[in-house]
Length: 242
Image 1: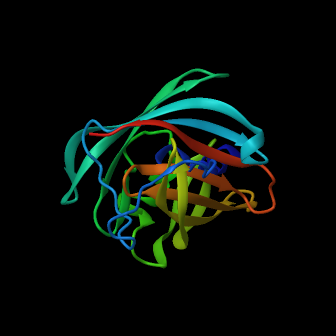
Image 2: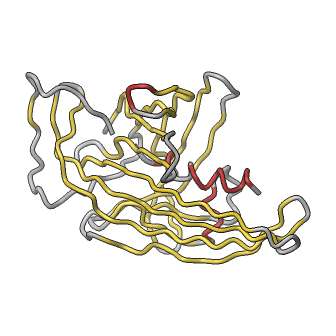
């Protein structure tokens, strides 16, 4: 069961991304509307990330190089969306690839939770539904609160998961010699797993801070468990936008 819950901690990392740097001699890029933080998913767009862990961003251990790319369009539940492919080249382990369905609109960035997808991704525990992972307009938003039963090593577990989000701030983001206006948001995930045979209960409390940029897209995330000094980072290193 601890393996299942550990997946919850890194759920959002593969689909989200932040960076920092010096403000000396940089070109300032101002959003045409400082209140509009929406970005588009366009077929062929591609982002490269370093997936890392560490106590602080300047003392991290890079574990994966990830390439996320927007693939073919689709329609799920009446929503026009794209298949987003994520290929990871591991430095210490074997490489692997996953895929999710996603779309954006003026209100937010959404990922589809598919119980039949078979992805190595805990989003399927939320059931078949669209999840708003970034809200471009609201200060707070409730995403989902659900309970489901699953079998783990022959024993039934009752899992409760709640996911909510809030805006933290609008801030300057430095990337490749330019400064952009970024939107910093936080996802808060609380989960509990009760073994219905032994009645042992395990709880996980996880937060993921994300900065997105209207002109770029997902930029960097920092995911952590309160009280644990180690954080998990997804750091943008390059992009190819159509």
